[in-house]
Image (cartoon, rainbow, N blue to C red; front, side, top):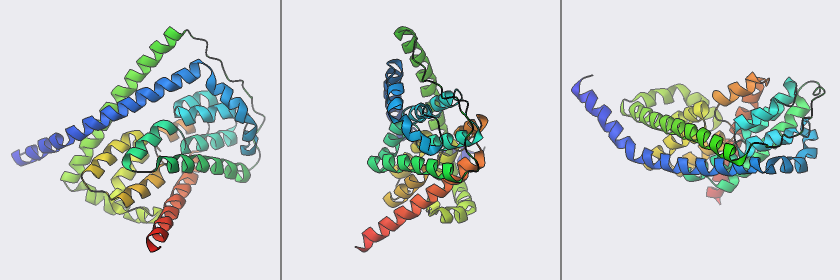
Length: 310
């Protein structure tokens, strides 16, 4: 590496650190708070109680009542907790695909809504859009997927039986691991984004994906952030998004359109792979969310056009 390249490398690292540290601190605060609250909900068996109230609705999605606990676990906690419940229900491929799609649309709602609100999106809009998208896609898949779900094991929600001390210790260890992973990924992504921009690679990436971005109704300058959100999800992708916004590279309109897309379609490497591993059909889970995301963006563009015209 020559002297000039080394200096550009160092400067990119130096410019990235302050904003990334602030983002990490904010993300850690949100993550620890939300995970602690969810730990308490599970310890005091509040989530199973809530699921019993709404379980009758799930027959309209071709799912057993206990699938409500899987959905709520994913909605308030994350995909991992939903998967833990789904695997205990004895669902066939059809039912697994339906509940997995619903969870992929609206998981980690508290944390990810806070993340998107930080980027400038309306928190209320994100909650409504993601929740309705999950419900509508669940209904549509139940109507259009061939056949009906086979007999399923309507497993009762397991009660939390571990002592509080053990529960707190497990929560602390798992949260520490998660925080370490988050900080590592956020720093790595922000630094990568800086280098790609500094050396002109971002422009080349944008050109390759421009046709796809046009189909989705997204500005070409959101390409890298769209890729990041699709690969690693909203939590980590938001760090890069906040950096781009802070440097004035994205307009408020660009951010809102991107948020409309990635709110229901993100983390299509890890989460989608996990849902496929437990029996979901990957191309169905991916394609229906891509279509929903595109529809949401074009609808949002129409709103913006009508608002500007009035």
